Length: 252
Image (cartoon, rainbow, N blue to C red; front, side, top):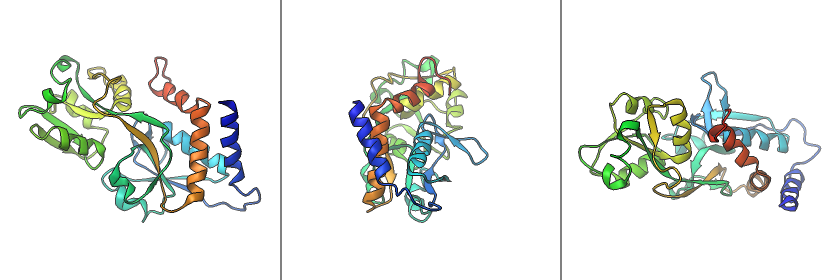
C-alpha cells in the first residue's frame, strides 16, 4: 500500500512542470450545500471533505484553487460556461452527467437512505412504506435525489425544494414526512437536527460511486486528479476526512 501511495504521489509531481510560472487557478465548481462533502460558509468560502481534497490537489499541482458556486439544477449548464476544471461536492456517478463531463476515479461509495422524524422511524423505513399517496416526500431539485424520488416514490406526494439546507427544517416542523438522500449526508445532518433520524445508513436503498467531474477530453487533468485521489485513498486520507465529519468523535 505504501509503495502504491508513493507511486501515485510521484505521478502527481511528474505531471506538473517544476518551472511553471504564474499557474492558472484550478477552478472547482461546487454547490456548497451537501455536507460533509461541500458546505458554504455564507461568505464565499467553502469547507468539507471534497473541498479539502480539492485544496490538496491544488497544492500538489502548485495551482491556486478557486471555488465557483453552482447548484444541482444548473450544474449541467454551468460546468462548461463557467470554465470549471472540475466539479466536487458529493457528486454521484450517473449516466446523465457523463454527457457533459468526464469522471474521475471513484473515491468512495454511498447510497440513498431515508431521513424522517425520530417519532416516525417505523413508518418510513422501506420504499414500499414511503411510496404511498398519504406520504409527503420532499426532495431538493435537480440532482440524483430528485431522480431517485421520482423513480421510487411515484405514488407519494412529491415536493421539490429549492435548496438542500432548509429542507431538513421542513421535516422537523412536520410540513414533510421523509427525504431520501445520501446516507453519509444523513449521518451528518442528524447531528445538527437531533429530532431527525437517518434510517439504516449502513444498508441504503442503492449504491453508487462518488466522483469528481472533469473537463471533457483532458487526459492530463484526468491523470492529475486520479493520481491525487488514488494517493489519498491508499494512505487513508479520505477515511480520515470522513471520520472528522461523521465519525464517533467528529470534530468538523
